[in-house]
Amino acid sequence: MGFLDDLKRQADALKSKQTEDTATLARNAALVEAACKTTWHYWMDLAQQLNVLLPTAPVRFSLDKVTALEGLKRRDFRVDARRKQHRGQEVFDHVVIHAQQTSGRKLTLNKDFPPEIERLESRLRQAGIAAETEWIRHPDNGRLEQVRFSFIADVVLTLRLLPDHDEGKLAFQLMNLDGLETVTATFAAFQVTSALLDQLARGIVGEPNDFLKLAESVRRVEA
Image (tube, rainbow, N blue to C red; front, side, top):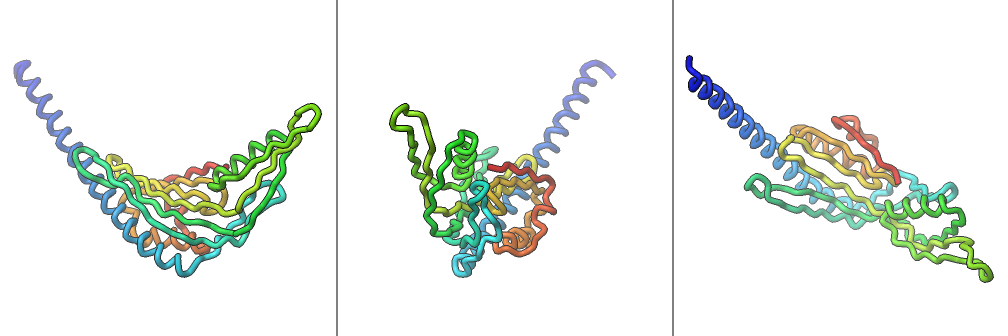
């Protein structure tokens, strides 16, 4: 066999691999798109039911060592989806369901220690709370004495589905579902079925569920 024949063999092997890779990418993308569509339709239906039921959030949101929010009503559920171009095809960029967890309470918290100020600011930011802040200084020397935070104690709930079409995986980003934190749970596309979404819905209404236990990986980022 000559050198040219060897090059032909290498080229044929490479073209065969490229064809297999393209087929794999197309198969992964199709599975991910099906999972996104299933989630979108499920959440559209779920939002309608939850806006009637107004479930109570089964969680205690701690703003500081002495202040916690409990018994918040989950309401105003709404669903959105966005599309994008990927490898020449229009596909889902994300699917998201938003809600408010409402207490209706107006709170005022005073902090005079920088780490406590930063900690409260972080938790309010995670909660989606835009507080009015008043920086109170000593009238004689101008030294900061305390920061006063005033706000309505309602917490944002956001569940976002983020697809990875090439890898055939989807990540659920759960913001403030079980606390002031963002939890990211990753699943293979074939796992994202109505049965899995039922597990997540159970979590939203406060029932025991296995949603996170079924994930390939789970990452938590606390406020």
